Length: 326
Picture (cartoon, rainbow, N blue to C red):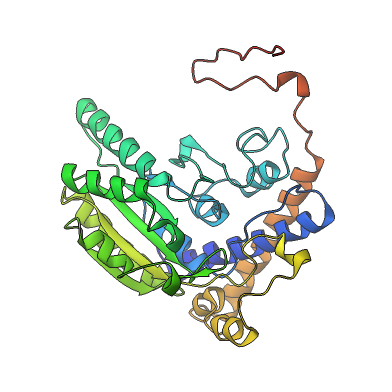
């Protein structure tokens, strides 16, 4: 679905989820910190709202927004961040490795640029399976940041996708910084030019506006489903919070306050919220707060994994890992 309310609900859910998650980091419920997605909500909402059942996504170390926009259960997601056995991955994936295969979420990935190859392989296999079973046209989305565009594995994935016409949408979330390194100091040429070098259509869009991202995604997905191969969307966006919550205590500074304030004037939640009536917007806000109240209660009240099962779930076959010394 895509109504102004659908897109607003998605960006509002992601924003408030991230704010709640940061609170749980500071209180010690979530150990180790997170990479907040605050400010980039329009990308996840615009892209994932355009997808169908059966489509596949892969994500990054900053992946909560993608997972939530693909309709993962916020309560189980929060439990995953908190390392609880009721989490999406039984508390074993944490913030940077959340997955839900039943929803086509083939995992966030802490290795910069690595998920491109996973997406191409998974979508290629899904298409072969669909052909054998007599139907279906699954496509895939690989999310990555500007810091990944110089990684060899991502460029290899683009090359293979273009050669084999694999229906993958490469989505670059260009928030201007790879941790603290600016794009202008790291990227020669342009990000869209990377895709164009492989004969792949590419477009740069305003990644702060959910509707603009949705429209660009819908066009790219139509092309993919028509067997015309991959494409790339560069979404210009900005993260309002730290690269990682570790920065909240370290107080590192690599962006000036004026820059951050200017970026906050293009807030995806406010941009999409302005398209709703006050009554409709308030109703969504109330719904989201109740949903997240319940999610926090669920996560905090859930048990931690039993250490005796630490070697379970290591193999797809179900074989249990062996313990031993030396």
